Length: 115
Image (cartoon, rainbow, N blue to C red; front, side, top):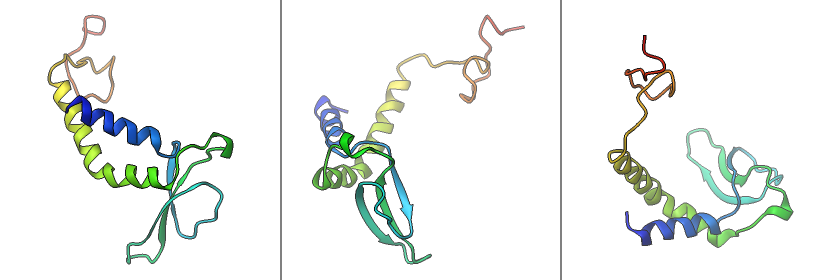
């Protein structure tokens, strides 16, 4: 990933409405800032609406155009970022002790936890 690509992703993320966002399934009640209305998938007949999740109006930044750019690029940006993380993981030593780092799936205990 180039510096320019990373900067473009960062700029889109900073310009979009504040996180966190959530998906509302069914009727939108207007309680939070509307980010996007996606409609129904046709299976359950319920609309999907993306909104901010309890972001106070005075803290809100971004707008519809910025949110649309962020959403439209996400399908490319997220896989690109995942690929970059995996590439970088291959260049560094990763944690190996399951007692120190549960959930990483490694099996070698560190000096502190070895029998």
